[in-house]
Length: 53
Image (cartoon, rainbow, N blue to C red):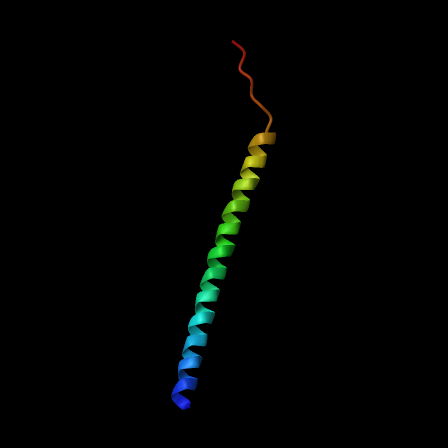
C-alpha cells in the first residue's frame, strides 16, 4: 500500500509540474500574440507620411 501511495504522490507532482509548465508556455504565447495585435493596430491607425515629388 505504501509503495502505491508513493507512486501516486510522485505522479501527482509530475502532473502539477507539467501543468505549471503548460500554463507558463500558454501565458507567454498569449503575451506575444497580444503584442502582435497591439503592433498591428498601431500600424493600421498610424498617421501616414506622404512624400510629394
